Length: 110
Image (cartoon, rainbow, N blue to C red; front, side, top):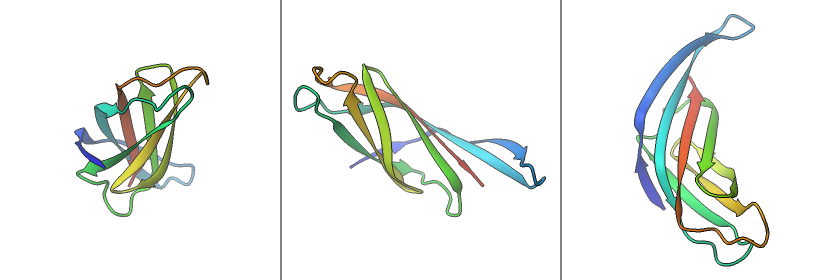
Protein backbone atom coordinates (compact mmCIF):
# COMPACT_ATOMS: atom_id res chain seq x y z
CA UNK A 1 0.00 0.00 0.00
CA UNK A 2 1.40 3.39 -0.95
CA UNK A 3 0.93 6.58 1.06
CA UNK A 4 0.24 9.76 -0.85
CA UNK A 5 0.62 13.26 0.53
CA UNK A 6 -2.28 15.50 -0.35
CA UNK A 7 -1.95 18.85 -2.04
CA UNK A 8 -4.43 21.65 -1.45
CA UNK A 9 -5.83 19.78 1.55
CA UNK A 10 -8.98 20.98 3.29
CA UNK A 11 -10.08 23.57 0.78
CA UNK A 12 -13.60 24.28 1.87
CA UNK A 13 -16.83 25.50 0.37
CA UNK A 14 -19.76 26.28 2.65
CA UNK A 15 -23.31 25.27 1.77
CA UNK A 16 -26.70 24.97 3.40
CA UNK A 17 -28.93 21.99 2.66
CA UNK A 18 -32.71 22.04 2.18
CA UNK A 19 -33.16 22.05 5.97
CA UNK A 20 -30.96 25.16 6.24
CA UNK A 21 -28.33 23.14 8.09
CA UNK A 22 -24.88 24.50 7.27
CA UNK A 23 -22.05 22.19 6.29
CA UNK A 24 -18.67 22.44 4.60
CA UNK A 25 -17.38 20.38 1.71
CA UNK A 26 -13.62 19.85 1.79
CA UNK A 27 -11.38 18.74 -1.07
CA UNK A 28 -8.06 16.91 -1.33
CA UNK A 29 -6.11 16.59 -4.59
CA UNK A 30 -3.82 13.64 -5.29
CA UNK A 31 -2.15 14.24 -8.65
CA UNK A 32 -0.13 11.58 -10.51
CA UNK A 33 -0.99 8.53 -8.38
CA UNK A 34 0.72 5.60 -10.15
CA UNK A 35 -0.81 2.31 -11.20
CA UNK A 36 0.96 -0.92 -12.17
CA UNK A 37 0.85 -2.60 -15.56
CA UNK A 38 -2.05 -4.94 -16.28
CA UNK A 39 -1.42 -8.68 -16.22
CA UNK A 40 -2.73 -9.16 -19.76
CA UNK A 41 -5.62 -8.36 -22.03
CA UNK A 42 -8.68 -7.34 -20.02
CA UNK A 43 -6.95 -7.67 -16.63
CA UNK A 44 -7.82 -5.14 -13.93
CA UNK A 45 -5.28 -3.36 -11.72
CA UNK A 46 -6.06 -2.41 -8.09
CA UNK A 47 -4.17 0.30 -6.20
CA UNK A 48 -4.51 0.91 -2.46
CA UNK A 49 -4.12 4.55 -1.34
CA UNK A 50 -3.42 5.73 2.21
CA UNK A 51 -4.23 9.39 2.82
CA UNK A 52 -1.72 11.63 4.59
CA UNK A 53 -3.18 13.48 6.41
CA UNK A 54 -6.31 11.37 6.84
CA UNK A 55 -9.80 12.78 6.43
CA UNK A 56 -11.09 14.10 9.79
CA UNK A 57 -13.03 11.60 11.90
CA UNK A 58 -16.75 12.24 11.62
CA UNK A 59 -16.62 13.27 7.96
CA UNK A 60 -19.61 12.20 5.88
CA UNK A 61 -20.33 11.71 2.18
CA UNK A 62 -16.77 10.76 1.26
CA UNK A 63 -16.45 10.87 -2.52
CA UNK A 64 -13.47 9.81 -4.63
CA UNK A 65 -13.14 10.83 -8.27
CA UNK A 66 -10.42 9.09 -10.31
CA UNK A 67 -9.27 10.34 -13.72
CA UNK A 68 -7.15 7.63 -15.36
CA UNK A 69 -4.71 9.00 -17.88
CA UNK A 70 -5.32 6.08 -20.22
CA UNK A 71 -8.26 4.27 -21.81
CA UNK A 72 -9.61 2.70 -18.63
CA UNK A 73 -12.69 2.68 -16.42
CA UNK A 74 -12.06 3.28 -12.69
CA UNK A 75 -14.09 2.28 -9.66
CA UNK A 76 -13.43 2.85 -5.96
CA UNK A 77 -13.90 0.48 -3.03
CA UNK A 78 -13.06 0.33 0.68
CA UNK A 79 -13.45 4.08 1.31
CA UNK A 80 -12.50 5.12 4.85
CA UNK A 81 -11.10 8.28 6.43
CA UNK A 82 -7.59 6.82 6.09
CA UNK A 83 -7.73 5.72 2.45
CA UNK A 84 -9.38 3.72 -0.31
CA UNK A 85 -8.67 1.31 -3.15
CA UNK A 86 -9.24 2.16 -6.78
CA UNK A 87 -9.38 -0.40 -9.57
CA UNK A 88 -8.84 0.25 -13.26
CA UNK A 89 -10.41 -1.93 -15.91
CA UNK A 90 -9.38 -1.59 -19.56
CA UNK A 91 -12.31 -0.15 -21.50
CA UNK A 92 -11.93 -2.85 -24.14
CA UNK A 93 -11.39 -6.49 -23.12
CA UNK A 94 -8.62 -6.86 -25.73
CA UNK A 95 -6.54 -4.03 -24.17
CA UNK A 96 -3.83 -4.30 -21.52
CA UNK A 97 -3.39 -1.50 -18.99
CA UNK A 98 -0.09 0.35 -19.13
CA UNK A 99 1.96 1.68 -16.23
CA UNK A 100 0.54 5.14 -15.74
CA UNK A 101 -0.71 7.85 -13.43
CA UNK A 102 -4.15 8.88 -12.23
CA UNK A 103 -5.38 12.23 -10.96
CA UNK A 104 -7.62 11.84 -7.91
CA UNK A 105 -9.86 14.25 -6.03
CA UNK A 106 -11.34 13.30 -2.67
CA UNK A 107 -14.17 15.30 -1.10
CA UNK A 108 -16.12 15.03 2.14
CA UNK A 109 -18.62 16.97 4.23
CA UNK A 110 -18.08 18.13 7.80
